[in-house]
Image (cartoon, rainbow, N blue to C red):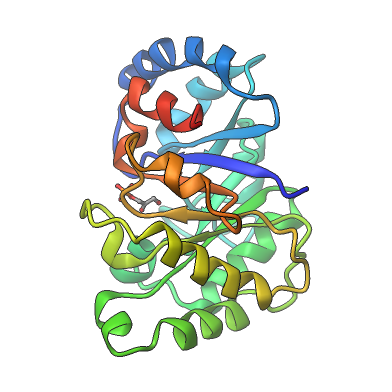
Length: 241
Ligand SMILES: O=C(CO)COP(=O)(O)O
């Protein structure tokens, strides 16, 4: 049985005060969430500590949005795995397309970050996916295969989540058709040594499309951006039918 993981990625949204207001609205809905679903909130670094304290004893797991590959060192502006562990982080998003696009992340640094996260016991959520241009050029399959090949060198596939996030579907309202997401995710699975790795879909996941997405046999969860910022909407996603 593959694990279901529904994760919110808040990106660069919510101050500490706003994060606490979210929790107050969101936590009560979890009484309806089937116990086998893992619920994760990947929040800005500055929210981690207070979220950790106030999520203690709940079923929500804490996630970060990036991690450096060294445990410590002269890396201004970076955060290491031991620092995340100390504040209660369990998951970390790695290789998000926004990191690759705006902050120069390469498959090589993504691989280093994955290794560091795993060596400290964090579960990475590795993001892969093609741009519109790559899709239109018929390069979706080859691009994703290459990302997986490079990103997963020496990675333990028993402590890993993968998110298929087509870049053209992120923040656009232009969701990848559920059947197409299912097809690509099946393809990703066929390239893994462990076929039980949970593989999420991400890109304009909303309360009104989550049921169809989660009805697909290959899709094991969602990585949710904009719709995870609002307690009622994210609760509807977590409590999909
Ligand atoms: O990038 C995403 C999650 O990591 C998806 O963002 P949206 O859900 O806002 O499209």
